[in-house]
Length: 301
Image (cartoon, rainbow, N blue to C red; front, side, top):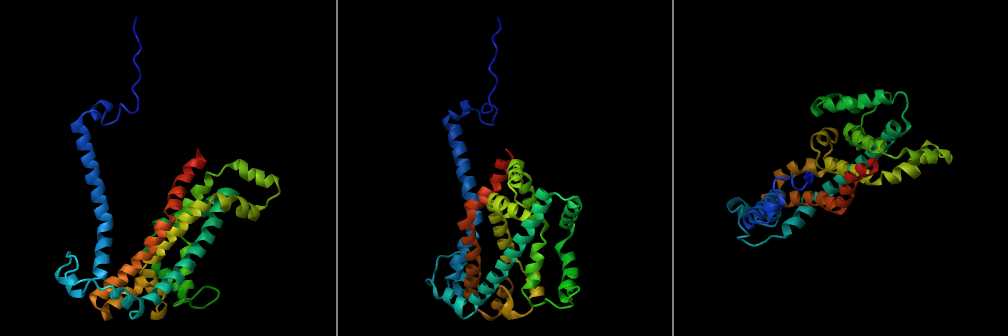
């Protein structure tokens, strides 16, 4: 009589079997490999940030002569205050904040409403609009700069110029095909039963959007806001073209001009201040980012 063999489990089909894990040499090699990989990733991600912090509180001569030395001439914490007050980094940071908040607001309004129309309302012309939105992903950014600048220089119908106005960077931020794509894909997984129940209760499209869709999409809205914030904070090319007044330029555009009039240590301090703010935003909202990235699969399941 033949006895049936137990089917192999998923664990026994892994690269390292449970029997191998009982061997001390295998455990030692596996543990050492994990430590080396994690240490390499940590060094690659935090190394430049730590060096920038060291350079921002070091003297210029120390940074030039001993770039990897630990404060041969002592620390210079006043570099941070000099960069903040005397080099007007505070004003450029404020300009970046105004530009970023406006881009987030415009992007969320356009992204959420367009994704809601395409994924929930599903009009007859929806596939055409969705195809046109996706087609813009294949247009290089540099190619789109010329017609976009001509548009803001002489706004159609209004015949006014938006150059050196924050509207010139706020409005184009709303036409981001990638943000529309991920928001639509997220809303595609909404349970239709909830939407139908809202319709039975007499909720119209706007009320359904405000009271049903937005609460469910809150994690993805946070993800969208952080993505727009990161992109706006580091953007250089378009703000340098659209915001030609120096007093309106963000920190990303003003830093090269600061480098011409300040010593190296103050430049490093200004760069460190500009880097800290988006890093703090990421640390504050990293839980919402992880939740938003995983919630789409949970809704679909």
